[in-house]
Image (cartoon, rainbow, N blue to C red; front, top):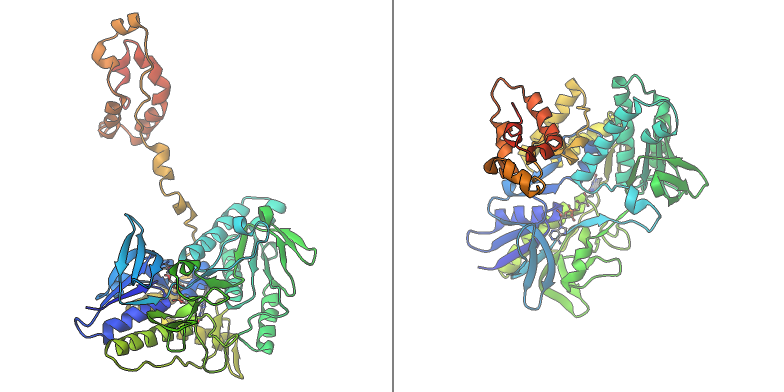
Length: 507
Ligand SMILES: Cc1cc2nc3c(=O)[nH]c(=O)nc-3n(C[C@H](O)[C@H](O)[C@H](O)COP(=O)(O)OP(=O)(O)OC[C@H]3O[C@@H](n4cnc5c(N)ncnc54)[C@H](O)[C@@H]3O)c2cc1C
């Protein structure tokens, strides 16, 4: 049976596999998806996850749950030898192995693209993953908790200053959503005033959101300014060392949350695949999504989504190629599945052609923008369009239901605004109070050793730990814990003949 190997289970990869499951006849081909993550991320929801409007797990789609007929491997494809049609799979656990295939589909997506600006690699956070969005949400909430305890001053200002670098769609959406989130939070923090919170968006170009018309983008800047969020146009970030923001305009301020959204680049892993790559680091593909080199089509190799330079036959697109967005990734994934099935059956393949439907962005609760050609919507109607479109575009009814139900909950109950930042050290509380084996008794001189009852002095420390676990029900746990903490201090004394008495620490 022919083997189809899909590298990456994000938008394009997930849809390719989903549609292959639908269109392949039983026994016609075996489909395998390799991705280090167990889910595809619905990235357009990341700004709302960061703003606490969507629960993180609702914004991802479990691969195994929804791809029932596909073999799923948790790992990365680290290299490919297309001549021998083998891929090296490096699993999340265990040893790498060579996997053979007949057709390979590269849908490994994109990663944040940064520039070597001092401090960015160490201080900033991207917005490409659910983990980043969740961390941003928690950072805002934790910083509010801290700032509420501090007097006015630089330390407090730093905690309450949010910086976003990049005024594209993702940057503006997260900036505006966070503004809305922070404004809503003020109700729960009487110690913090609106004027204490600071929002700066830094954009190197002279405008934001190239996907919408200039008047619409100017409306967004005005709307943000009215909400206390400043957009710095024609401004570059010069340094972010130690969280101190230095701008090309000479302005400087500190921030504890610097979000980098100034561009993406094709996942660099594909450089190890030996397949044709164009000058911007993307896989070279034809409009029918087959990989193409200088010598023509590379049989059995396909590409789609952000990782590939797919020609935009509508005449739109940047440099003649489809822009990296979900609109394209989803449709390319579906066509790719169709074309593979056609190839297996000896039929012809079709070219990818999709006219941009327009753009819709959420800018915080009740505010949005929508642009399709010359038609623009702003404010509440656009916000409904945003929620309506994305609520329904989420793959599978199971996921749609969770997201939409979450919105309904929030409408009646408000956002769930507690920080779970402590989860990054989940063992901290357990570890702090955990009973540990006593340090081994230090060596004693011969006469003392002779005086001590041999079995007690030699009693291995590990044996003492269970005494705590099995402490009498009447012994309050806290006392047991306190004794356990004191135990190391007592330990040296146990080398004397009193060792047996010291043993039942929980007494
Ligand atoms: C904040 C934000 C908001 C956005 N909003 C919109 C929007 O409103 N509308 C819109 O159309 N688009 C939007 N986009 C863009 C859209 O999400 C992407 O274009 C889309 O996700 C691209 O899909 P993809 O399948 O190419 O890549 P991804 O969805 O990124 O999937 C790539 C997958 O490949 C996996 N992978 C990577 N390397 C390997 C490897 N070596 N081996 C195996 N697997 C690998 C990754 O783990 C990942 O799961 C937004 C993006 C962001 C970040």
